[in-house]
Length: 268
Image (cartoon, rainbow, N blue to C red):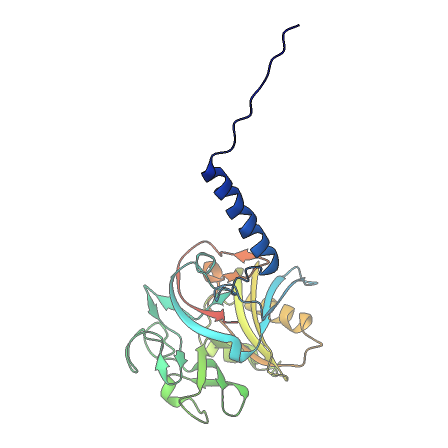
């Protein structure tokens, strides 16, 4: 009988070094796991909710605090940015037509510049429109009807932010529609996607987008119905239709995929 003898060649030295290195790294990871820092573009300090109203209006909401909000200029769809949040005010060809001011500075350009975020602007002139203001010193929200940032009343011009839109007048069931029309809300009786900001008595901010094509009145009614238990104080309508966009970990609503030029982003 023929016996076959197989001689096993010893591992080359560099194989032994590789194996030793792999074992060392594995043990190190077990003892000292790598902790990745939270990415600033993926915040966690917010609450997302989806709700379907009795009128068929679907609402998507990001709830957060006013200190956790940053007004930002962008040049893309909200869902194409690294931020969670919603679209901001009205615009035209890149110019901001709603107040968008942080600590006395407009988001684009200088105070007084057209399209900088210093003015609430209509078709042919500046408009007095509802502007949501967070006063960082007095720690309270207000909706102020102004045409430019210089008219805003705050405790300290270095500690506030302001986002322009159109008044919701949540506490005025008889006059809200008249005020909204006076502020020249676009397409208020047509079916469009909608965006709004509202706040409650605890200074909780709600960024709300409806992908449902609805009128302004249907959108406002759905908000009041959804948050009937939250003691809402007031709010504003933002730009709508294809500009109604929202991004969170749970959902991405791109509107009609158009680019917008300003948003409210969640920071933390």
